Length: 117
Image (cartoon, rainbow, N blue to C red; front, top):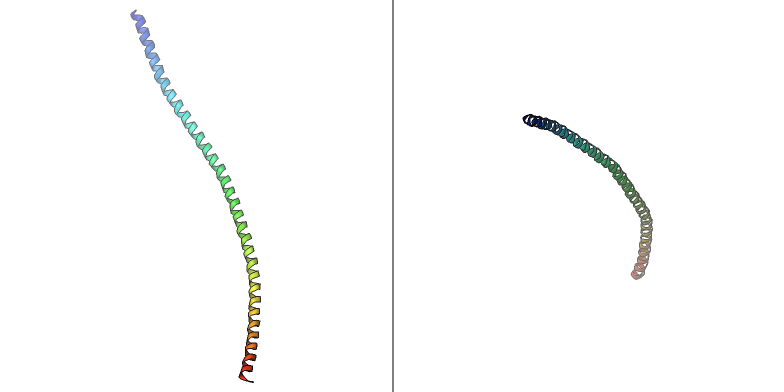
């Protein structure tokens, strides 16, 4: 019976020794797996950021191009309207000068008649 107890004690010590060695290996394997999972997640996240950054950059460029086209179109319309207003302004100035000449001549004629000449 004592021999059996010694054998059981020896088996328990061996199981405890194997358990301690196995616990270290399990801990190392868990650490390695967690590190690999973190690295994979980090690389995946960076890849997603790069892909979305390109998409956002392209969308921003497209929007900026559309805004630029709208501004250029609006500027072209303003230049055309400004040219039309410039032509109308010269016509108005010519009309005012002619009207002033006619009014001056009429005023001179009326003034001469009233002065008795």
